[in-house]
Image 1 (spheres, helix red, strand yellow):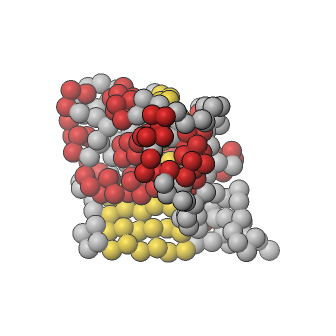
Image 2 (cartoon, helix red, strand yellow):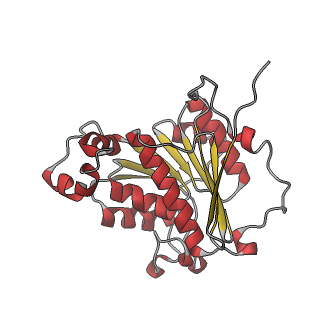
Image 3 (tube, rainbow, N blue to C red):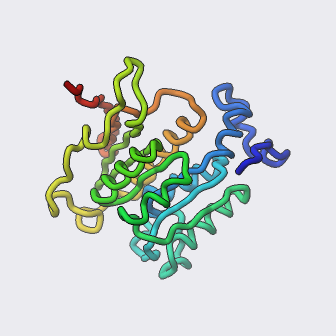
Length: 254
């Protein structure tokens, strides 16, 4: 979106943002100008898309090639019972439009891979990865690093989850290069070691909490406010209500 002027209805819609000194009119215009790609229209992608749409992000792209199943509805709030059997992007578009008609929704009904990923990622300012497999997480980290696009990446399992922000093209306050995904997770665990949600189960609110936190990080990055999770891994345990943050850095090169 080239025109970021806020209409009277948008000013009313975003009034609670605009009165925040940290956001204000300039921040709301930055949100309207932003182009954010969301990977996955599932448990994490649902709250991400809903909150970004409500916040006034001008363009939301979403990549997913799956259809809605009945077992999705316990946590994937973009979709409803009448959507079972339909493409997830169709119900995602409907839900986003119902929340905010000012948002442009771009569908990418494909499974991302090394062949198509670069072209899909390129038009966006920020990517949020809510995928459910390590192959996609490593792929998105590589694609976003090459494109010099910040990546918010979240993962969940049962009652817990983790979240970090990757921007390896930038530097920290000490002038040191920001860490990469592989500085945090050098390699994926062997197949079968980490059970899928279908195998281990997942509390619906786990995806809601981590997806909302991911959307929060995206809004902070777009508006240039707060202390982001670059170089930090947030770990959440909802059974004990423990929130812990660990720092990680890129190894120094000799």
